[in-house]
Amino acid sequence: MLKSTIVDTRVRLRPSKKLLALLDAQKEHFEEMPANVAKALKDNGYSLPTSIKVLKENELVYKRPTIDTKLLTKLTADIPEVPLKSQVEDVANGEEADDQQEQTVKGNFLYLNDIHWLRDTLDKLRQQKKINIFLYELLENCELILPENEFKPRNPELEARCQRLRDEQHNREYHKMTKNVDATLKNVPEDTIAYQLKSLNKQIIAVAQFIFSVAAGFTFGFFGVNLMVGPLPFGFRILLGVIVALIIALAEMYFLAKKLHEYDEVLDAPKRKKPEPPNVSGVQNIKPHVD
Amino acid sequence: MSTETDRIAAGQLLDSLYLDMFHLIEAHTQSRIDIERTNSSGAILLARTKFQQGGQAISTAQIPTENSAEFNALCRVVSVAEKKWAEISVERHAVDKEKGYMEPLHWFSVLPPLSLRNAMDKFKKCIEIVAESTNVQRELSAVLSGIDRLRRSVALQ
Image (spheres, helix red, strand yellow):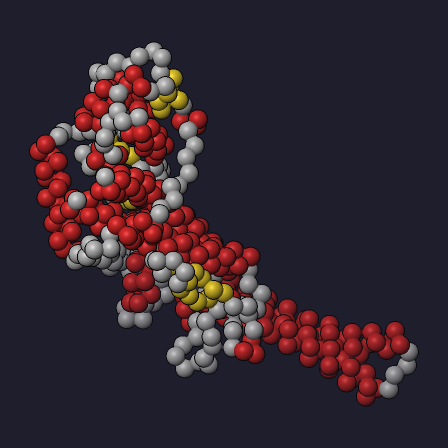
């Protein structure tokens, strides 16, 4: 199983019965209501008066609340910081009690905007002295659903392919390892003369290219500069030729070394696209080496 | 009466703390996703470089060992102690060879391929997002402890 990326980063809240009942009791005071709250009410069997205007998701814009840190420190000045352990116990006990007391309802979730609206509404109602309850008291009974990763099974095709590639890799390693132990396996991939000639040819061509370019550089220094500038002394012409050839040789040497190194690698790794390594002796099969 | 106004103030504060907590949880989740995305795209670019340049192009053998010359860190985490939760930020220094600030990209090649450069940018960005995420997480734990203490103080009243 693989963890996939979180798609929905929103915090969701499953409203409790207490919250819905309170909203239902106060519904004549509302003028408008977010769509999610309205839906949660309707799904749980509460009716809504038609005068309430249902707000869509994008009509609600709220900012992060500012926290009065001075007030917070003032109010909590005489409360000690408790060790984490007792905190956890507290939370666990509280949850159990909540479970027993009040079952949360099924169905809809409330999102952050709805909770903002709820706070503002409760604020208004408190000012009008209609209720005396705070949002946190309502939220205590609600179920908070945090965003989580989904688990996805791995694609079986991909798994099979990876397994095949792994097997091939192990096989190759094993083969390389045992090449100089078992005489019959020694020249398995490069057993034919054609193959050896081919790789030899490639190297010869690379070396020949090197010689040609050095020779061409010398020729340019020896004849070319003489033709362009006019008659030069013989010793100077040789010097020029050697200098140009040397520069080209240095540059070419780098590429040659790189290329020959690559050939070494190619020779080390047996050819890839062989479903089964060739059976030389006809007696011994190469065992696939899998961990 | 004073206890009543106190209770109302505490209640309102607690409400805004709860809302702030929700906001912070969302921000934290978002930054986690961003870290995941940037990191994986950086890793993919690194793999692309290896694919294009061959297996030997980028390897651990090019990274300096214990015996190589010392150099200063280009990127450091510094704490900004302005707020209650110690906020951290990432400080970057310009490359300056004479003062010992090396460019790590040049360990691998003098002319690094584009995909390697892009991968480095991604990983740099990732570090910054990690710092942001840490800040959000610290803020969140501060808010949570605030909620906890305030609730106990309300319960005492």
